Image (cartoon, rainbow, N blue to C red; front, side):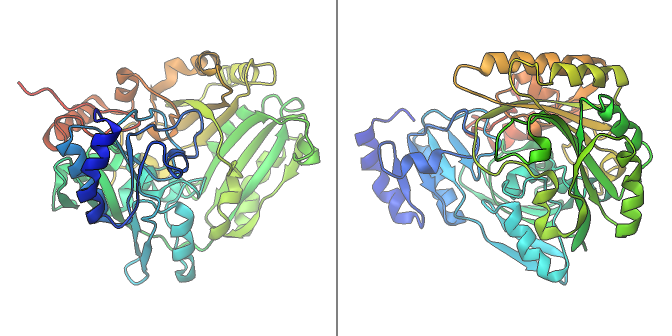
Length: 463
C-alpha cells in the first residue's frame, strides 16, 4: 500500500464502520500476533490487517484495497506461507471458523478460517469424516484449494474432488456462488488453482462414512535396515486402495523430550491409515514388520478425531522450507541415494516425506478440475528447519536430495511447496492446458493481479 500512515487512518473510518471484525495498522499491539502464522521463516508485513469476522468484512476489505490500488493477501493458519506480502491489505480469516454439518446429506459447510480439526470434530458425532490432511491444524479451505491429499486419499481421492460449492469474493468486491452449474470456469479453477482468483469465504464439501481407522506408525532404525524405503516401496505395490500410507525419514536428536527408543537415531517412520476391518489391516501391515529393525509401534484402532496422531507432526509454529516432486515411480538406487544425502551427515536437518498416491487419486474425477499429474504414483517432500541465514544452504541441500529423482518427476504439488517458487516451478504443478486455462480465468476475474498468493498464476495477457 502506497499510502502514508496518516492517510490510512483518515481512510479507515468508513471501513471500520462497515466491519464486524477488527482492523490493525503497523505499530498497534495486536498487529504482530495477527500477521504471524505457523510458518516462521517470514511473515506478512501489510500496511493494514483486517480481522474478518464475516463475508461482509471480506467484501469491504477487498473494495477498500481496490479503491486504494493496493494488493490483498489472505491468511488462516499460515502453515503454507511462502511469499510474504509487503504493504497492502492482509485479510485474516481465523475468526471465520464456523462448521455446519448436514448429516442427512453427508455434507459440511466450512467457513474460510476453520481448521480441519474443527470439521473433524463437528462431523464425528454423525459417524462422518472429511477428507482431511495429516495435520489437522491446517486450514481446511486453503488445503482443499490446492487439491488436498489426506489420510483417506487412496480410497476417496482428492479433497477438491468432493467440493460442492464455494463462496468467493472477487477483485471487484462481488460475491460469487460458485458451483459446477453456476460459474463453471471458477469452479474448475478454484479446485487445484489455489488462492489466485479471489477470497473463498466458505465451501460446501462431501463427508464420508468413517468414524474409526486403524492407524499410527512403525518406526525403523535406518542404520539397521538401510533399505527400509525400498522395502516400503515394494510393499506399496501390493496394498489395496483402503490403505493410504507414507514414510517420514529423519534423524532424531538425542534429547530428553524424544522417546528413548528413538533418541540419537536415524529413523524411518511408516505412517499407516487403513480403512477396513482391523484384523485385515494388521495382516496387510505384517510384511513391513518383517523388514526388521523395528524400534517402536503405535498402530491401533483410533477414532478419526485422533487422526492427527498418525503422522504425529509438530503442532508448534516453527521455521521451515521444503522441496517437492510428484513421481511416476520410485527407483531403488534413487532411494538409496536419498537415504545418504538426507541423512544425519547432511549440512542441515532433512525430514524426508514419501507418500503413496494412486488408487482413487489416479481416477478421473466426477467433475473436471485444475488438479494435474493424477498419474503420479508417489510424492516426495524434503523439509528442513531453517535458522537465520540458512535459506540458501537449505535450498541447495534439498535440491541435491531430490536430484536422483529428476528423470521420474512429473511436476510438483503446490500444497507441499513451502517456500517461494519461480514461475516455471509453479507452472510445473499443472498440465500445459490446465495452466493456460488458469491464466485465462485469472485474466477474467483478477486482471490486475490484485490477489497476492503463495504460488502465483499470472493473468493471461490479452491481445
